Image 1 (tube, rainbow, N blue to C red):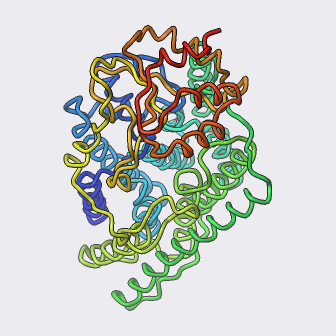
Image 2: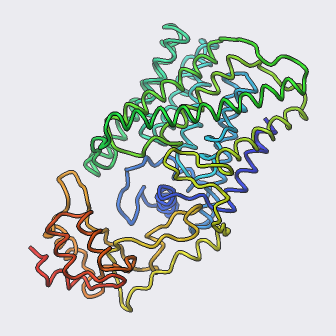
Image 3: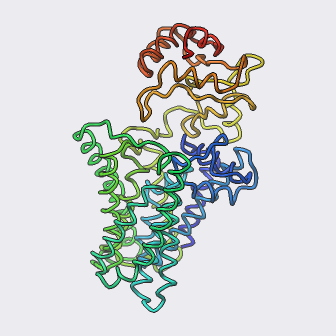
Length: 496
């Protein structure tokens, strides 16, 4: 395990140097800051439940400061600890060094580890749940100890991603298929305890936000053909990538040890690991088919590909393909180099091309320098609140996503722009006026249209994004490249 831990440390240093912060990452860090102050899981003082609070809570626990640079560094340290723990638990479960290596150091796992994403905690929960299930199978005498251990990891998964709540049921079906009814009966207390937590957490969210998962979930807007095509394309490409990693491990094992690396071993652990991956993929496809959220990519589908590939490795490769520390180090280094080249250095990892290659001519400043480039908004003197209609893309956006909360000077309140789509439909001109009036910003409130260079582009954006009456009212007072007083919108007739 030492070579794998060392390789994960290399990824951590790289991530801490360049950031790897997405838009969702900023939300996790803002929640972590709120928790570290002793407040609730909140952003801007408002309870936030669009994501579960587990991952930000772990960041808050290990963070030593409230500033962005420290929180980013703490999140990378958290990811390192989570992945080393996940690899250790996975090895304890599957007892296959090649499967553990492929689980921890493949292109998808590497990308997840680099970015401040809650999937880092979820992957620990998956590995821990599988480890606890194996204990239920091997040590039936430790009934309640096993139940509490399983429930702990299942609860941890639900606290990381809402996806894990239905996925826990998928794991139960996989246990039935691979181990049988006897082992399933031993795991039921753990699943029941976790279900009680899930129900309580979702009910709490419902009371405080009106929704079990913190926001309305709208049907998927894409056609069935689009979803199926995108899912198959992504999964096929990632299976090819991880299949290449399995091949690299097998070839190195043969060259270094002069031993045939293939050994068919359909043990329950390998089969359960593969079944957990297949179940993950099926559930991810079905949920995204029904509900709109992040498209098929490393976060939504990638963990299923990882579990399936590790399960295949556990079944087809010998358990121990390295008999010395030096051989383990060579194979680990090869896996790390392969995964880095596929995930970052050669081409985009996703079908949508959201993660760009390193050789596209962008500059890659260190985190401290990147953060210094954020507060470039220059509102008028005396501004107390801003309604931002967008901020400019920054050169650092490849590794640290723009953050509207960090764009404007400290002390300026943000009033979110009109909602293009909400549960009751697009926000109307009158409803937006009410929000402006109740913000209590007074004469210090401004609408920020400075991101637009041409009036034509600004008007096109307004009419494309917002309700007709609201777009017309805004177009009447908007000026590209300028801050416009909120009072101008209210005087134009926006008030009810």
